[in-house]
Length: 262
Image (tube, rainbow, N blue to C red; front, side, top):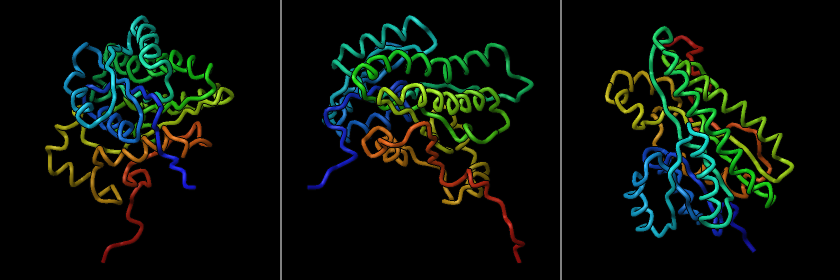
């Protein structure tokens, strides 16, 4: 008898920051694999159109508000999420932000906005949701990182610090919560076009510069992440925890010519 290790039927997945961008792609992929969804946005109603799209796809989903920068919002969300379906099996910590500036121009407020959203928020969301998982002895937590979790880039100092922090946080949580049957991993996309960075992809010269550094010779497309998110959420990754899964077209190999072109 064959067994589909990627089947999420009967499981409940939370995806934070699903009002736009990669959060919506993660949601579709998990829903198509069979999961029921709880999707979040900072403002009520921001996910209404996406909820309708999911319904049209035959995916059951509910939307809740969550501001990962506010402690009370996280507490209220965790209670509402657990009540929605009675359990949570999968958490995708996707909500995040970025402010691109040269290091000399980064303000105190810029730093706090990015680190509070991208690092402090995911920790306390995971802490709140993992309480339920620990009681049931099962859970999958997927923190969304970035190629900046392992590489440094000018203009992204606080963002890189937050994503590097996510990698270290993930390893610590994996050690803390493994005894409860909870796995904690990082999904780290490479260079993907999103709402946050779309202006860069309108510069053809920059896109060509980027492609030269990617062995697969193109930036990522959002659906390139579908298989990876389902893998980390499913039984297929049951003996994997504390790891970072880079989906980057190979840019982190550090592509450099080692021979002279003739």
